[in-house]
Image (cartoon, rainbow, N blue to C red; front, side, top):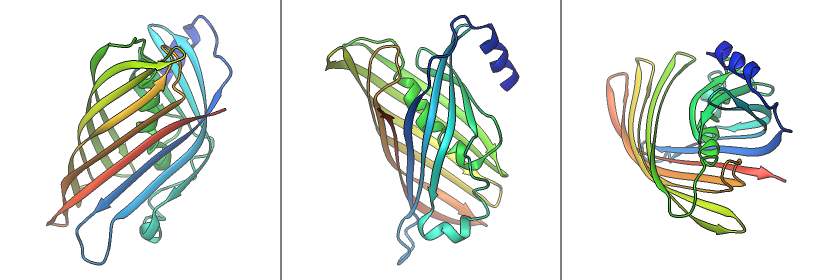
Length: 240
């Protein structure tokens, strides 16, 4: 797939424009309902440089991770060996058509880099050509397998565009999703709902994009089942 993306890039007409910088954040919390333990909070934050270029039938976003931090809170010691190498220098190659990401491929397998995929998808959603009053439904399905963990996420967003002043457009979305995550010994199944908000100009990368979802699910760990509450906050903010 990466070879295909690079080939399409080579066939493109206009070359890439100068990169723009963003701060991407993916924060999640999981409450297992275990007395005294509290919610487990994980935060992936990164500064990235993004270059856009035209390609056959769509566009390519080249997202390079300049620096990042991963905070696992009380789970830091347990997850130290599972989060892998520092993602600095790793890039995500995204091929998208009118705001919809068709594929996002990392330049190297990296667990932390893959935590930024949802923020990149949200950012690219803001490039859709739309005008005030438009509405549409967008659906995505993502399957990933990193460090023996497999994830399948399905997300449906009902978008509506409204005027935001000075030629900008505000995109507001109602989100429903399902996610399964596991490696055999551990399996999680979650259902979520939430909202997404993007301020953008048609065809351009947004100045800001945010998404917040909450939900519940079940986790099976070694044959023991427990109910959990989950929450996720994703944001992408342009750095002037």
